[in-house]
Amino acid sequence: MKPFTLIMIIAIVVAFAALADAGNAAPLQQDPTVTPQGPQILVPEQVNVRLGPSIDYELVGVLISGQHATALGRSPGGEWIQIEYPGVPGNTAWVYAPNVVLETGQRLLPIVEPPPTPTPRVTATIDPTLAAQFNIGEAVPTRLPTFTPAGPVVYPTFEPLTQSGGSGFPPVLIILGLATVGVFGMLISFLRGR
View 1 (cartoon, one colour):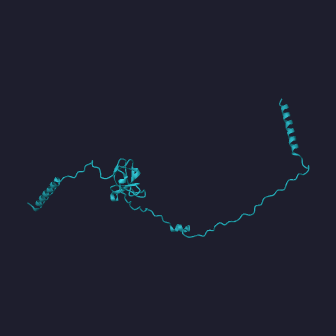
View 2 (cartoon, one colour):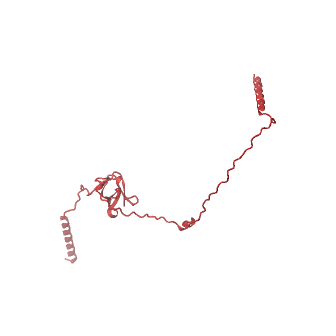
View 3 (spheres, helix red, strand yellow):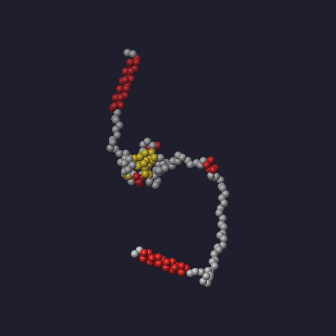
């Protein structure tokens, strides 16, 4: 036999022996009816999952209605619950406690110190060119209003009317004259209309 063929036969025998030993080992099986250890939360309606116990933290996912998750702890105020959430840093995340049902008492959960508050992604800065246009940062003197007293109040005075003795025509006679002319005009119209 050639040396190459002999090496190939030995390699195949060793491989079959290794497979036979692996087949004799007890297989790892997971029982699908086993529930995870520890307190559980039940999600009645969809709930957001965040990296920390506040809406300031990044939203990393959601739990939908009917899902369960293992509760690990609660925030110091008890408003947020820390849960197991694979796929995020540390495999832990937070849900808002009023939006989920804790199947065991919340007082059984340990208090967990929240992670540091995230820094904002955008920092507000002032454009120096724009600030120079509005003199931001420089104290500009402003003239304050001063009090000027009002002048004295002057009340107008009127001269009393004096009646002159009979130099004018009385207006009542003009009104009576016009009324008489009107009555005669109506009488003539009435008589002509017959």
